[in-house]
Image (cartoon, rainbow, N blue to C red; front, top):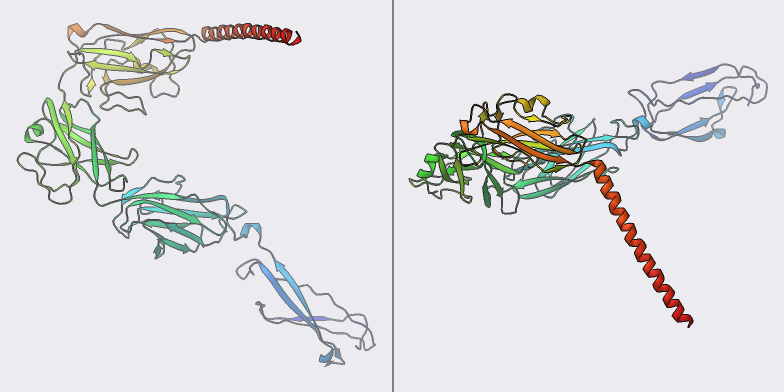
Length: 499
């Protein structure tokens, strides 16, 4: 090559530089002396902005063609390949990670934001294009952002799943935004659907949806309200409904009086009354209207327009299923006395206690739920104990009330008892007897306006500890005696062996 070792001007020419196109770079030498010429070049790849390259390996071919006095010597051209690796930034990584990625099932036709707990869904299995639930999938990448981009595969054992027009028992969906909503639809099958959701990197916990058949197979009725008042009351009859597969049947049920005579006391022998499905408890709850004092027999069925004859016998007109017969009692008795009681006889220090106020009729029996004004005299319930109320819906002034409202139904969850008003308190820290005292109020007849009491005992923590220590001492003494006996026996055996 003709030239000197001192470079002259360096020229660069390039149009827009998309991948796969060529660049022309030229270095000129001013001197005509023989020598070597060298140059350093920097290569840049666009990895940000709208035209950014994706992660991967890019090969750049560098071709050096020498010139002699302006004439190219192609036979001496040299080609060198340079590999440049573009790595994905953590904040833009495409793979999803389990940490932070979620799949949540929500009941209904659309997902409501901020739900983080799966819904319990029981739905009619009849085929429909209306979703009974939506699973929202959110994929996060290693940086904890929603930049992950993976396909989502969803399978179900019953019904169909999908989004954007792609539905079936097994679908693979593109995830290209910040979340993906997947519909769950019935397809005419009945049973419990198991739904699995996964991506190439993440597998979520399975979801379940219960699809029930078009009609129930069994209806088991029970009475939740032991005493009805005249007028309408909710949650009187409870019904457990199952289809042939044993799935909870959540369709509409209706209650009716078994005969015309029963209808005079409660409900109706001619107009079925709709019950309400309680999803949380997995049962139907039927309202009943009390008409007159007495006891009425009632049933529940699933066919609203079935004819009811003069004797209220169900005419089998359609796919009807009828429950067992139950008896409801309409109680119009008035309060004659009032009773106060604890839920236990003995409590630990600071233990929660429930106090019940129960109006009773002249026979000493609980009566229908109601608000009883002036059931107590002035001051309500008095106590000689230092109750506390933190964490309870009861406050100190509640015990001083002279009027109470009783519950219609009992509840294991809340401690409510049908026919009683409930107060929740916390016992004192010190041991001893706790006594409640109240005077029957003006609502009661003169014979009921007397003092009533209730007592309970708080165990003395010191006495309990002493008793435990005494019991331990007795046990230790017994063990000591046993050890002495065993030692003596061993010594005797040893003497015999020596002899």
